[in-house]
Length: 591
Image: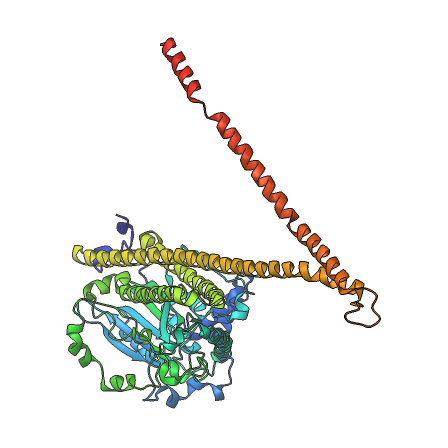
């Protein structure tokens, strides 16, 4: 019912007058776009745009002689991988693909797609010249670029208040998490508990290098950074074997005249193996290079394995050979743009931008599902009885591992809840165009319902896992307290034994010091016999023994007295047979 209030993509002449906001505004020039962002950043309400304004305006502040965009050989380099892909949709046919490597190529592709619905994939780092060209052409809300470029280090993350936007004010912008799971070794020896020290060292080193990676990106992104360089926002070491890379997928959807435009910006771009200083390298992870593996995001579709020949035909020999190179750290997200939408209905994709984005949502759901499975594995390993029972130190380290992974889980749970809220309320929040025919409406609504159910399941699973982490931490805390109590009991028993020995040796030491052991049996000039010392020591020991047990005897007698009084009270409360008979007789008389 609410879908009737949304704009319907219908190109009939009768509907063209009734639709609002269908007139295409004049495209800005690249310089005008950067100038407008810089002007807004000068206002008090636009202070959070300073970084974006400086980034977009950087090309116009450089010297012309060192401006890389003015060198045609740099832009037309044939071996260079293109990190901008444009898909245009028209009717029931397959979408057309344009691979773009420069603002000039983008302008040419945009001219050919002027009256077509368009999806643009941006992968990895994009230079300011490309963002200015795209933003000026489609009048892209700069907030989209600002949010995606908002990257902070661990040290600055807690010192700056993040700027946030309400759902109603960012209805055209979505941010989705993208997680790549990886392992640092395939051997089983790392399950031993003494490897916890290695995990702590790896976490400290990766955190330091992660900050250096972000700092290097922020310093070089205006001029020196290569286009398409992958951006990693965080690296988390979950256990001695597995770690994960966190990236972002930013989505922008807006009407463009009678059509719509969507921009999908992926952090995943070039091969991460090219960055020799990244914290995901084998040297930092303290293993061999062949032991570092990035795991693919598995998206199961019924019968997909039977279509492997068709998939292989679409994959070039260059791609197959490169994927076998051991030095490459491949990410599934970096291939998300390839053959995009081939499993979707092309007619529905043309008229419904949300349906056209369902593959992105499904990819994120699959990556989050694998992440939850990894966290469940980490939880099970930390609570293994064989590891916890003999090692109190392992119990303490396991507790910190659970805290570490639970903080990671709770952060992703909040992201899943945001996505689930968007899917539940998207008809009220966004005003994206939607399909008008019953057939395409059913296809779109079915896909939306599947996504809603998938994310509802992920949210419920994440909540259950978070509760399981809480239970696990309680178990470990109780286990630790029991272990400490047992240790305290053992120490108390040792102190009691030592106290008992002291009650005997202290009196002997006292009497020996009084007599000085100057007895006739030991010295010639002694005046006393050793038997005097023996008798004195015996009396002193007896007195010490009585003093030692006097408190216990009094406590025992007091307990006996209490039990005796309790028995006497119980006897008085139990009636005798004569009393029972007498009471019974009174009852009969009363009847």
